[in-house]
Length: 207
Image (cartoon, rainbow, N blue to C red):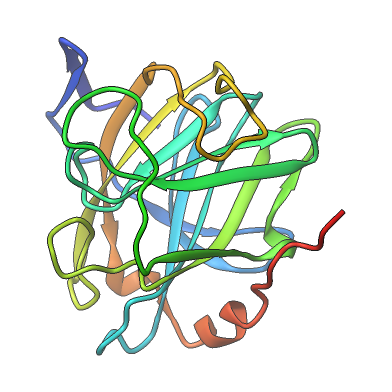
């Protein structure tokens, strides 16, 4: 997919609409509206068919190599709820982040939670994938997209360098080497199968 942002002083200025497209994960069977970057980074979301009062969604994020992948649930980096994830051996580490300034964002706490979907979370020889239910993640304070919108803009960021401590979800990360914003069609992200998919989420087994 052609990049449509210009990087100016480390800040991505949107100059053309990058758009998500339907994508069905081969292992989980979940259908997302997803964006795929030339580096192997990808981000997808799935929503319930009735957005009324909904605060949950299913997300999939991943990439190639050992670096980190990130997403902004409101578009820009600052003052938005962020999700960062990266592979650690055969597992995936993830956390919520939030920051009011540029730099490695600190971990964010709140009522929002992540619960992985095992059949959509894996690390193999070509890429890694983290699929999870993001519960109470749709906020009304402008830090995320809104549930009843027809479309939204989400942000993405990535770096091929692994975090300083891959096993620690609070680890600092190096500055992104690529970033941008993507338009997601939220109407097409909605599915009558959402409840079934959501039911697959469970806490990972203790090794």
